[in-house]
Length: 331
Image 1 (tube, rainbow, N blue to C red):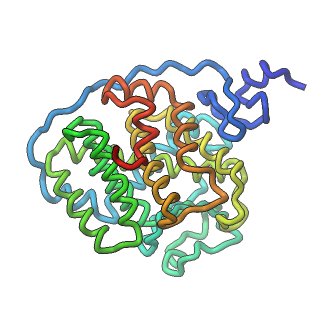
Image 2 (cartoon, rainbow, N blue to C red; image 1 turned 60 degrees about the vertical axis):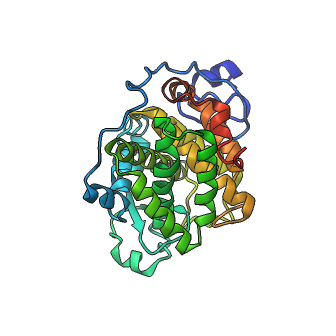
Image 3 (cartoon, one colour; image 1 turned 45 degrees about the horizontal axis):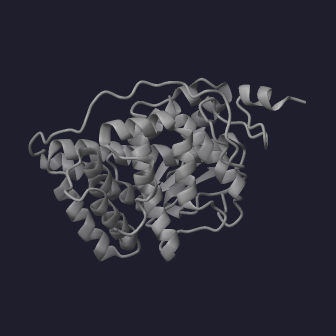
C-alpha cells in the first residue's frame, strides 16, 4: 500500500485515492489539501486595458451569433492542451468525441454521452450526428448565450475596471443575467445591452476571451466525465453523483492550468459559477441536487488554480473573496 506521501507524489489524493491532474492541490471529492507543489506559471503579460475605439458592428453581431465558433475554438484548445494531448488515453477520448451546439436547447445545460447506446435527445441533432464517433458532448445554445452575456456585462468590465462601482455593478449584473434565464424578453433586452457594451474593441476582445474561458471550463468538465468513464449512455442528471461531478471538476481545473491565459479562464468560470449559484438559490433554470453547490465548486476551482488566482489579483485587483462573492446580492 502506498503511503500518503507516495500517493501525493503520483497525483492521487492521499485520503480518498482520486486520480487527479499534476497541478491539483485540493481534492474536489473529499477536500483534502496536498499533492505535489504547484508548478509556477508566469503571470500572463498585460494589465487593465484602455479603450481602443469602436469596433466593427459585424464583429459584434458575429460574436453573439449562434454559430460564431466560440465552442469549436474552445474545444480545440481543450483537446490540444498539455493535460489532454500529453496523455494517450485522454487524447484518444477527445479524438473520438463529437462536439455539438444544440441550437434548439434553451436550457443552461451541457451533457456528455456514449454514442453507441443512446441518442442525443434532440431529433434534429440526432439527424446531424456522425456515426463514427464513440462519444458526444452537447452544449445547449442557452448555456452559450449565458456565457456571452456574462462575458460582456460582468467579466469584461471587471477586467478593465471600467465600472465606477466595480463589484457592486458586477453583482447586480450577475443577478440580472440569472433572472433572465427562461424569460425571453428579459434575455433579449440583456443581449442588446451586451452588444452595446462591446462597441469598444477592447471590451469585445475581453468579453470574447471570458466567454470562451467559461466554455472551455464546461467542455473540459464534460470531457472529464468521458475520460473517467462516468458516461454510460446518456448522462441522466438525476443519477449523477456528487463525487463524479467533483472528479470532472478536478480534471477541468487541471486542463485550464495548461492553457494560455488561465487567469481569464478562471475569471470567466468564477462569473459563470456565481450566476449558477444565484439560479440554484432561486430555482431558476437547471439546478440539480446531484451536483455540488456552485459556490463550493468555485472555491475548489480557485484552490486548484492558485497561480491564475494570483494573476487575477495582480492584473485586475480582484481578491479570492471578491470572486467567491460575485453571486451575492449587491451590497
